[in-house]
Length: 350
Image (tube, rainbow, N blue to C red; front, side, top):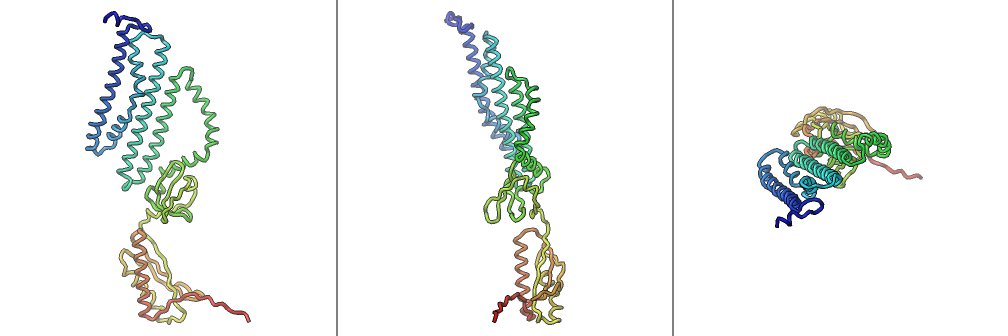
């Protein structure tokens, strides 16, 4: 048996090959066991804590790819063997690239899981910070991938990273010109994120279009319209437009008119402002401003009423306006005041 282990294969005794193989298997099995313990026990612990970071760490641990760690384990086990220097160099390069790739997976999962869990817990109470976190996650991923790519290139033989970065400076100008529209939307997205003219859940009006903000992406912002379809705006076009944000409205100022006929008597005209004031003040969450005989028109005498709705919600406003309209109809009927309406008379030639 001892003679068999002393046999030489590729410059190393079989015993050394066996020890190196045993270490490799032990490292792989040990990593599998540790990953399983961290995920199973750590998940139970993380569910009992209110923090987000521990959940993200568990998700990152679950994303560990054993196949990527095999190459570093092989390079580590190969130190027990006597091999040509070129073999050590190749194994070292492959091991480094595998580790960098695995670090990229860990970082991506860690960032994505943290943002996703933060959004789940804060989307209703703090939508602005959710949008900020999405932008921060994009920047963090960009920095992470840039660093990993540079480290990977630095470990490849024959590549000078410093010279490559200098050459990319010139090429970057050409790429920036080619991607001008995309980069414009990207910076517009960052502007929306930092300045927060609107956040997720806000009801906004852009030109003739209106809807609830459903998604703020890197290139586009999507609204859900009142009729149900999705409206998609380029971030650049959106920032160049006049945006009306109704979600942040604390009060609603309302102006409406009432037209009466020219047959209305002077005494009735003097009573109408008092009637309109009483109708408005009878409503809840409403502050009366004024009611005036405003103007003469070609077919009516026009009264203008202004009040402030103390709630920004649309349904209570419509309920109050409907109650006022019905009350005005009843009051005018009791006072025998006639509403005016415009008529069109078609004259026949002859």
